[in-house]
Image (cartoon, rainbow, N blue to C red; front, side, top):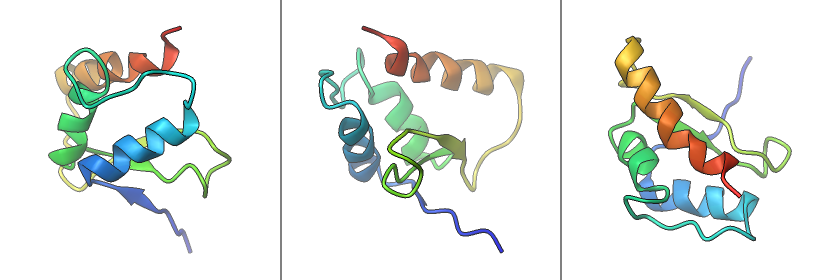
Length: 85
């Protein structure tokens, strides 16, 4: 049995990200979380609830995920916001 709570709702995903990175300025804009949230909204990926997973962000495949190198690259680039200082 595997219980995994993750969202494909844009606003909830943004809330999850902000909860884990309270000291960062994260917004739904093109130069911040916007590109990643676009993928979330398309349900290509989902953001897991950090309260269930040790207060960390995990990006997991969504219902519309189809493996291809270009999509994976774009999502990886969008996730780089987690590594910016």
